[in-house]
Length: 259
Image (cartoon, rainbow, N blue to C red):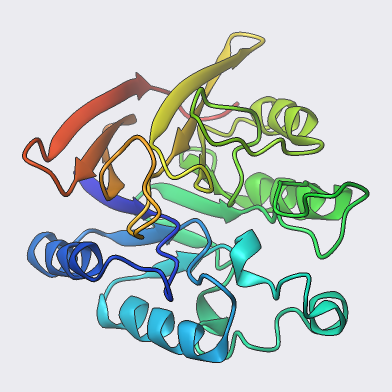
């Protein structure tokens, strides 16, 4: 069995120290094949927060891919940096950002859903640009035909029934394109509560999987992350929570290779 840990929204600067240590200890004890971090590593995108978050990710000792979240871009009150050098503080985690992974029959493809600026007031919400989708689809096409394909981005492409929302622009069109390309799941964060919902198109089922948070900014769920168990083409999402009821399964599916 292949095991992936899907974690999101740790928000260093507002992290929950107990939850962060709990996750690190579980990685050390259970040795997942990889960690997929779907954004908002930091709270305010400061160099110190990136240093702390990067040290934590490096300490895990397993392959890590990291997506950029809206909190990982300098805020509105630093508009010059946000618009012209939003990634200048990423040195501590640069090698992990949007890093495609191939792990035991699974290909993880990055999909950027953040934007430096948008034609709406709330820039924290998601947006999938044509270029971002084009790059993701190219990586999907390059993946071995017998692999499970997981796409990782920060914002849910469509709403997953949680209190928090993503309101991702072009998300529905991106989801349709990814389903047509044979993607098996899209992993995300942002809303701070886990979910797993199916999206069906043309007889193909793609799963939208959202992770909780390891920060103090919890919503309906205690500090949580997802464990994705993969075996023989079947993958199952297990929500792991820092609570008296530490595990619950929220999905399972079986998919053959892509055509």
